[in-house]
Every structure is written in structure tokens, then in C-alpha cells.
Image (cartoon, rainbow, N blue to C red; front, top):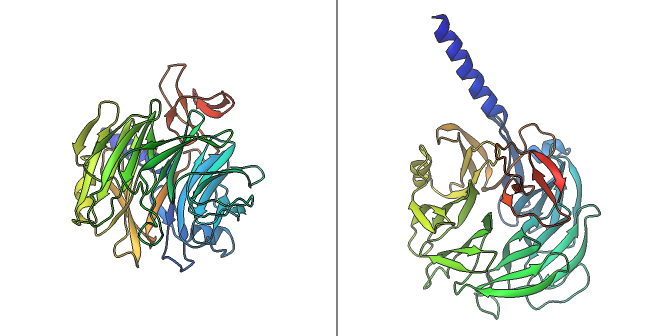
Length: 397
């Protein structure tokens, strides 16, 4: 009996310790033109809704937040699209300023010193006029735009890799404006913010955020929802080669070298789930981890997927009917459902904070001296002068 009690105590402590490491910010997009974007905060096994408002004397986050990224230490950025601002917060949710002159901003990337933001707009903070969309480079100390570069129409996903920015262009306004859908990924030198080249994927409407794993990008091609089917592109950032798959990756995240994708085909109404190994170019049907896949297939509107890079916990959100409280499913690394949280409208984006709550830290057992991680916890190849995590410590390469 005593042994059983000891074993039960150890098991409960293990569960408590695991939950205690879960510190997740959930970005609820709210409703378009309703000024009701919100943040929620998952702390272990509990959720605090309206977290940003509670931390900032009922201050509003803004209208339709599109992305969130951990810049460095105690600084986080959120792109708030319809409010035309980049909102900055500390890791405890406190307002710490904004960049207010990047209109129609979309997705975010960082090198730890600068923030890079895609924008659908044609006018910049530096009084430039562009025909297409652009990417803005923001000094995260001053929060000022220091450079911009024109890319394609309606640029979406953006990543930083080995001193370069990769920007997926959508041409998403093609049905309403006098231009076609885009098929290109623009490559831009991050330091000079000069365009290097455009990679033509042959697939239209490169819409949504991109996931990156090592040198590989997972890019969703949304099609035109009428006559052209969606596709998924896996691109190698080192040599610009790519392969194309005949399914969508509307929602995608990465963990341990794999891409986990939920795809929605607007033409057929079909929802698919896939796991892609980009190194071997193999695709597995279904996210077959515990009950994750069956739960996704039972959802009314899957709206986000994320795997905590520190713990392996899995998060999937359901937007329901897009006009009521959504739900966030929390699974442990084995895919066992831990909690189903009720949150605000359209829970779309997630960001894990380090388990200890004090800046960036990544626990790794990899003894390879060449292993470096970026500030989002993703293994990467370092570039001189940038900040990385190496052997569990933050270093300048």
C-alpha cells in the first residue's frame, strides 16, 4: 500500500510539474472591424481570458491581431492588422509601446535585433510609394521603421533564415483589384533590405503564415477557391528548390524536424491532416498522436495548431462558427487530452513562454557544439552578429 501511495504521489507530481511548464499566450482574432481582438493566457491547467485587458487597466488590444512573436528576453510583438499597429508587450502581458505606421500589417519575423513585418499597403512610414506590398524593418529598441522593401502584391508569411528574409506573396486582393494572384516567394537581404530574387513556385495565392524547420519552409497555396485547387510547397532555403504536394496546409506548425498541417479545401469543404518530413519528402496522412487527429476531425472549424517547443505539448483550436467563443484543446506530448479551454472568438495563434518565465531558455541534451537555436526555439544555422541559444544559453554568434 505504501509503495502504491509513493508511486501515485510521484505520478501526480510529474503531472503537476509538466502542467506548470505550460505558459501559452493565445491570440484571439475576434471579429473583423469589431475592435475586439483579445489575448488569453494558459498557465498550466488554467486559462485567463481577456488577459491583455486585465493586465493593462482594460486597454484594448485592437482589431484583428494576425501574428505574435517573441523578440527577445521580455519583449513580444503582436501584429494588429485592422488597427494598423504593432503592439509590444512584456512576457507578463503589460503594454510597452507600439509601432503605429505599418498599415495593413500581416506576419512577423525577427533576428533578435530587428522585427520584420509584411504589409499589404502601398505607402510606408518613410514616405515611399509602392505599387505592390512591402516588408518593413523595425528597430526593436526604438520601435521605429528603419527600412522598407517592395515585394509582391499582398505579402503574407515571412521568415528569417541565414541573413535572408523569405516572403510568401499572395495577391489575395486579386478578385477586387486590377492584378492577378501571386506565385512567388521573394528573397530579401535582411541587412540591406534589398530584394535578391523572386522564386516562382507556379502555385497561386501563397496565403497564411509559413512554418520553418531547419532550412525548410512549409508554404500554403490557397488556390482561388473556385477553379484552382490548394497545394502545399516545401522549399529548401539553401538552394531555393521546392516540391509541391496536392493538399493544403492552411494551418501549420513544426516540431522536431516535422511539419504538422491542417488543410482546408474551400472548393470541396474537405479538411485534411498531414505530417511532412521535409528532409525525406515523405507525407503521412493524419496527425496520429493520441486523440489529436480524431478530435480535429470532429471540430466545427479548426483554426490553429501549435506544439510547445519546450515541452512538446500540443494545442489545437476550434473557432466554432467564427462568431462565438472558441475552444483550445490542450494535449500532452503523447496526445492525451489534458484540458479543453473556452476562450474568446477565433483563437488563431499561440506563443509558448519559457517554462522558468525569465527570458529565453532552451533545455537540450544535444552535445553537438554546432547546434544553435533561434529565439523561437527552432534549430537553425547561425549568422554572424545575431543572437542565438547555444548549449542552453543566449549568445551572440
